Image (cartoon, rainbow, N blue to C red):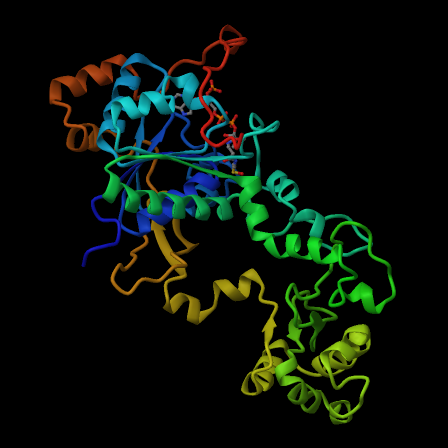
Length: 442
Ligand code: CAO
């Protein structure tokens, strides 16, 4: 069966998490993803958080499925020549180096267009054009700079980062969408283009409802936030709202049976207006259906603490799964707080391929998250991540067309093998190449 991105070849110059997330998705959609790595070292995550000595880490293996790996020193003359050939051969170059790294390597956007005018060059950077554009950025920095941390946690506690990797994987998703749109546009124009997904912007996009609330706050208190009912005045910025629902339907995380010993014996419970009467019946408070203090959503907003205390008195008598079983027939929106252990063992997620078991020659079997997007005409088969440089010869000969003699010359140059460590001080002070910033809004 064919796949959505059959025939699309990706020069994957990504590392760590944000870029690899993007190219892994493209690989699952059928693209031929060629990961270019530094000889001897490769993507730094190969050796981060190692759990099986001598094997690539889960950090790497879970972000680089379905790819091929070629090792090239792209700063060596022969390596640059190979990279040029790859640029001419591929449809998309994806990178998430520190700002200016590709320019320093000699592969500015201008140069890439000269080599291949159809090339789509897609980048993740920490920040878009502006005063922070040269900063290196990791996940939690993006969560903080994009508005997530200031709006996550409890009002009287520290800002919090979330477990969901919205800065890295979230931006990788944004970038993948930009790439697919650019590929579609290229069908009509014949031209490539530059695609930029800054992590700060991606996080802010995911925090869109909080910017909504910022503007609502200028008109008056946010009545669905618990602090309204508690009589705590609002400041001039959106506060942290604990586990309050982000939408117009009040919700909370509530204890369930066993919470004293199980850190995940909780449920999310939404008192959706449309099913309020069912909520009253289920929790054993039928009198609230006609009580004027509780009968309408507006009357309930100042009383959320009282309401959820009563709901919780009921949820504490049930397991989180019993809450689900009882509430679902009434269309009352609830959700168990599932641990990673429970998710790993979830039969439904395994059946759909979202949790997959993958075999690896050096680490053996491990669990991974498969493709979370399901397409009826483009099936996904998750294959293991490549070993460092596993496909170097194959790519040089079958993709780039080097002859046996040329291959020998490449090997002799040493550009596919680890080089002796260089003195970094020699390169210090080199000025970054100037480039036109296409994404500055001036
Ligand atoms: N051959 C030769 N050199 C190579 C190479 C290869 N195959 N692959 C990479 N390099 C070089 C780069 O050219 C760069 O060299 P210079 O510094 O001399 O220009 C160098 O390796 C290191 O690249 P880097 O600066 O991107 O790596 P870092 O570990 O210092 O920084 C990170 C990592 C993630 C902070 C930075 O890349 C970044 O800010 N990226 C953009 C934002 C991003 O994606 N962040 C998410 C990271 S996941 O949490």
